[in-house]
Image (tube, rainbow, N blue to C red):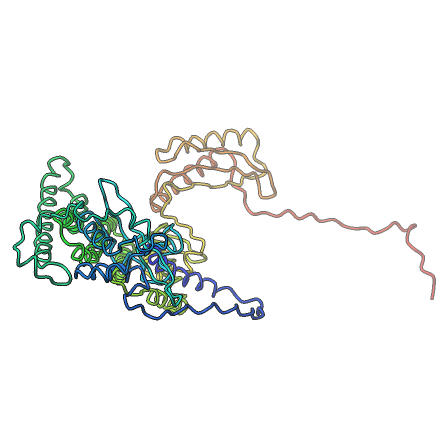
Length: 554
């Protein structure tokens, strides 16, 4: 749960920076009045240290384990809650011994990084506000949780103790608990008596041997699977399947060896103190295995995609893939380091906040660069244009020569090169002529007004025959229609498509069709309309004599 919160905070911080960058481009319409300051939150209380380290759940479990494995059960009993209802009948010394014996054989304590190190404990574990779960034990095949509960000491400060509901389920008779383990049975007496770090030396030596054995066993199993897999799945030896299998190989070995070590150490009876020391190591190995798997999958997917793009000669997309691969690896390393530091107990909240502030500052300082980069990603993803396409972009027509991460270069018909930033290009209207599968043949003939209806009927049939008999003209649609009578003449529209994407071939076919159609028009007895103008002259004689107005003398 805590890893998920850290990861979400890490991912949201750069996203917040991008949102602020976009908001910064919107002009400010009015200056808002300052808002009243919120009431300051109360300062977090600081408690004096407890001599036994019981201020936090992690301090309580660590102190109990150290005291019990040093055989200081009087001190270990101070970590168990005394029930006021039982008064003197409660034997906390016997309870401490029984709890230690039970933890040794059938107990499991969470890694320290999972146990809260705050006086308030965990607040998101679906338990009460003063309860924390720190592990589990099994008695007669029945498992129950180990619960710590927060109480107030004489000075009113919080201390964490094993709760009454946990202690009540532990049998007080230590002899009833099977304490014999494989390690204690086969280890020499001097290695059992000598202790280091609160545990017998034999347990440390056995842990190292089991760790090596677990890795060798995981290595052998992984190699066996890799060897047998191609025999059952034929494509396992071919790329990209082989690359994916190789990517899983090492991470699976690490994770499997960790799981085997935890299982074998528990079954062999390794001391809980030793297992706790290796607990964080197991978590770190698990994190490294997952990160290594993602790293290698990025390489495999990026390599396959890059190979395919090179086949299509899409160099711009190849550059984008390389950039994204490096960016993802960098982000992966940062997330991995944060998770490992968090596992080791370091407070990474400040580091995440610093990354968020740095991301905001970087986004605000590089608005245009980010805008052009996002535009290049959009162009590469949607592919409205490719290198070599003839396009009309805004009022610029030309051939795409290069699509870079910042700008796109267009070679115009005047043989000049126009560089358009990708952020601007992604918002412009683009007309791509390279995607035409056929070209439009659409001449309009203006005939003389003296052309008769019979001539027009015959002419339409002859022109339609010219279209339909040509092998490169698509018959659907291929039409010739008399469409208009106007001052410019009698208009006949030809509408058809030529089955070619090559513009030079189209010009050749168009030339052939136009010449044949002109021959048809000439042989029909009419001709094309020539520019003409009719002028009418008229003489105005004025008003009749008798109706002329009489102007009085001055």
